[in-house]
Image (cartoon, rainbow, N blue to C red; front, side):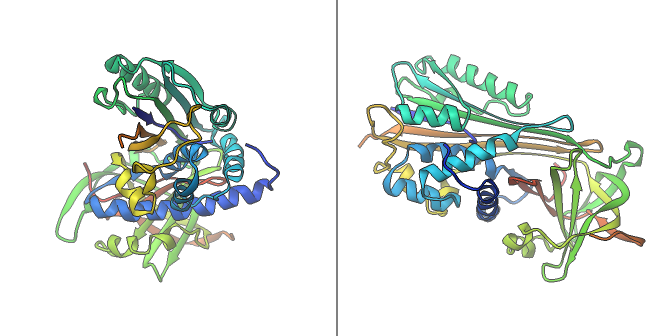
Length: 393
């Protein structure tokens, strides 16, 4: 029987709130770097990934994992081994994944259960009270209708940015459950680009190959840093509300992205910004990615979860033998003059075993006319999205 899960986010014990969020943010940065390193091995162009979505959906799986399976999940996701502490982290994290009057941010969870399948009381409590998940029974034998219903929910929660996450062929009468998360962000720049300033400019895919792109332009004060060790420039552009920002890391050389990616951990560390007057040229862009996560997670040491010896005995009321058979994510981001729209959804299939100071004079140049890194970050949570832009698609 299959347990198809698509989830993100979400116990309580007496831990210091700031310590919990810092521990998660530090682990999130390492996990993001590890995922990025695996992604670049199999992607030659633009890509985008939402490590936070995977982190949260598998944190719910962790709540039902035991023994070595739970240990591998903790290590791979850079989370504590203690179940109560993990749940305390996500209990504290959930309120941080909500928007306000300045921007839209939402992370919605839903658990679809096969008719007749019963989760344990403990797992049900964690899903509802920690991950704030809705729970609904559904007839997976009617695979087309079930897929349509779940995809409709994802589309609604991501404002139609993520479509067809769940395929009809993924479902059958053996499917036990589908756990779904949908994450969505829409924000406006504090300092918006003028649409009248956008014009065609060359973008150097390589030293020998250039294409024309719609290049936005603005001169304003931003957090800015030049790193001689990484041979790159950092630019932080905040969204209204200033809790969330996008960081662009631009190699100084046209062909410098590869060397920068080799030091991705350092590139994700918070640099020693100063507030500077910066002349910015940045392409308008849209990136969409579909990621099969099992090979990535296996490289990070999460192996038993996908084998017949997986121990997910904390999920079902009758301690059924379950194993994860698929982890899929779709991610989307669009950056334009007014701001950014981003969305992600992650799916996990689980099957039953078959056996600073302002300087007013100097203007710095940040001309993003060559491949660069980008991260969407929350001040409290850390990395939400990470990706790279290499060419106009």
